[in-house]
Image 1 (cartoon, rainbow, N blue to C red):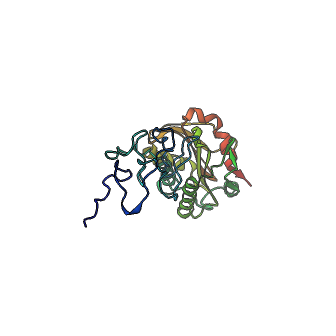
Image 2 (image 1 turned 30 degrees about the horizontal axis):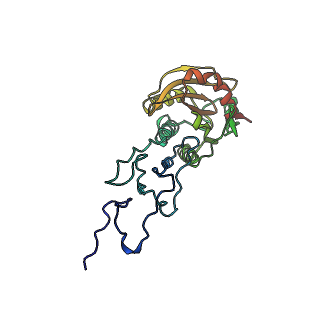
Image 3 (image 1 turned 135 degrees about the vertical axis):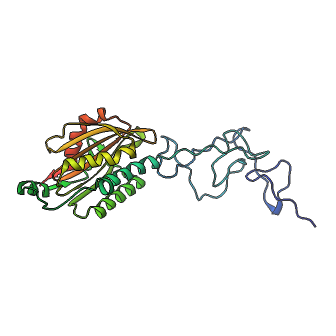
Length: 287
């Protein structure tokens, strides 16, 4: 006896056909006769943040409820209101992840601190004794909050920050401290990344120039202007850049004891300048 043909409509049941293999026929939807409600938002991959009030789809949960013939697995959902009869509808485009933007900035910072400028941390190299003593007392820290922003604990951002610190420590072995962290609330378009290293720097002005040269092609940064460095002294400059069309403000400081960077997403350099001194003061410490 010939076998009945396999179901040519994956994810749906053709009308008025008996189900092979003893399966129970699908029940009618329990939604008042209409189509099943639209599925929840497709989960984000690679570190994006779901929109407020729309939790990600849970996995590991068996089969679709009866009356939902259009649900697909492993590839998204059918368009809202289109059941699976007559062939699957085209899948909606995947949302673009923000991880690319983050990693671009992380890589740019690593380039500045480790490869491009290369933070010339030379312990005791031809500096005056007073400068060396002051520089060796300089430490960079990751405060629990930065200018009122909480430290971000999202796993992927934490992983990126850890990797950044690891690369800095590996390529700048004489560093006495390193920092790399994210602060703010990304869902509210408020996010700050910090990165830096401390140690005796022979020529802060050269390190500042090298840092700007290295980061300019990475973030399209331009028009770096000298800004108030604050009570810690040294040199400080801020400029505007972009990461995947997202505006970012980049502020860099360099002194005899450290080189650091603050990257603020979704803001311009002019907006960041008033709080730059506050942020630097919370990151760089003496003694």
